[in-house]
Length: 255
Image 1 (cartoon, one colour):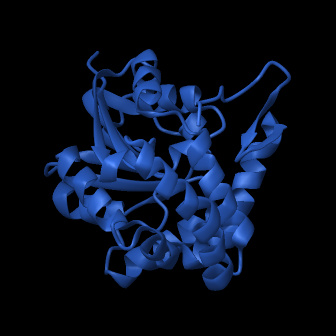
Image 2 (image 1 turned 180 degrees about the horizontal axis):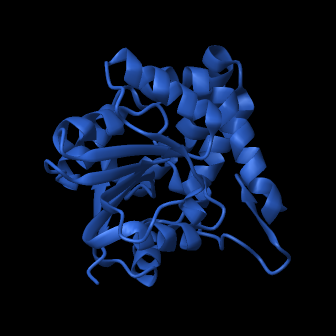
């Protein structure tokens, strides 16, 4: 499906395939994630057949977090990335988990505590206007969160602002499959099976229908690469995973 502009001149934006007022999208996304928060990890395993764990492992390895570094896991959900980064950053480092959704933060707090991780600060924050000082972090990750942001350009600029010079941003997100056959298979899976799984497991078909639609409205690999460069990030690299169903973009703040 062709990529579409995030906004149009009439002050609307997309919520899945639906056009809504720009001011309404954040509320609608909050309702989706408040609805799915309790079943979030279970559904992730079901939807991806567990492969999401390999995708996240790739991001962790690519991030190259070292002892003493400061890391922001943005849209961090249930904290699986933050937990691993905490091990890598060590006692001299600091890992912060941030999410705009209070219900998801609650799930993250509980999941981290279950693993004995109690020293990760949790911050409710909007990616478009991060409440951190300039140059606060060595590394920022956002996994499966950027597509839900209303103004992605503003969010990328905000992330760059709070990176230290030399710091890196990694974006893990659904993207565009690289072959026509895979695209057809993926479309059938997304629009038929995902809502059905959502209904059976989470009693919420609509939120998982939105998930499928939001993926199709998200910028493809090359478009997102250009957006990151326009936000002032350099040396942006793209890594396609599972045939492009998912991609990781990594860029650096060099000034």
